[in-house]
Image (tube, rainbow, N blue to C red; front, top):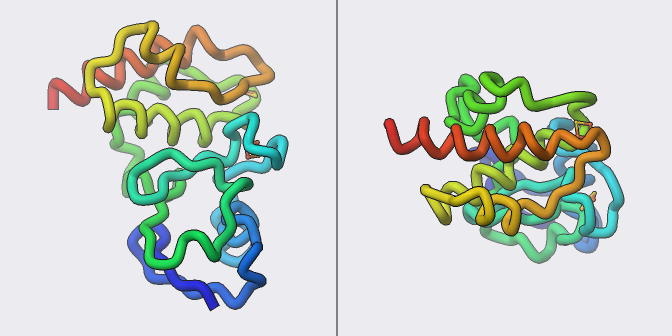
Length: 152
Ligand code: FES
Ligand code: FES
C-alpha cells in the first residue's frame, strides 16, 4: 500500500508499487486531466507537481512518492483562477487541447521558480511537446501569466 496526498486529499493506493503515478491518477483516482502521450518521459503531457516540482507522471512509480504532495491540473486552483489558467484563456492557447494540462502544470512550476521569466527562460524551461504547434501562444500566455501573478 502506498500513501501520499493528491490535490490536498490523502490517498492510499492498493496497487503494485511499480505502478506509474499517471495510471494511479487516471485509473484509480479518476483524475483524467493528466494525459498519456509517449509513456517515456519525453512529451510532458503527463506533467504534474510533486512537492511543487514538475514531474512526468508516466516516469515515476507510486512507491517513490510515499509521503509526498501531488498536485494535478484538477487541483491547480479551485476555480480556474490560477494566473496561468487566466492567461491561457485570455490568449486562447489550446488547439486540440491534448498537451495543454501538462503545459499548464509545467508553466505553473516555471513561474513558481522564476516569477519574471524572459522569453528565453520560457523556451529553455518548457520542454513539453505540442503536436498542434501552439508554442507561440504558450510563450505569450506564460509571459502574460507572470504579469498577472506580479499584479497580484
Ligand atoms: S506521457 Fe509522460 S512524458 Fe509523455
Ligand atoms: S494543442 Fe494539440 S497537442 Fe498541443
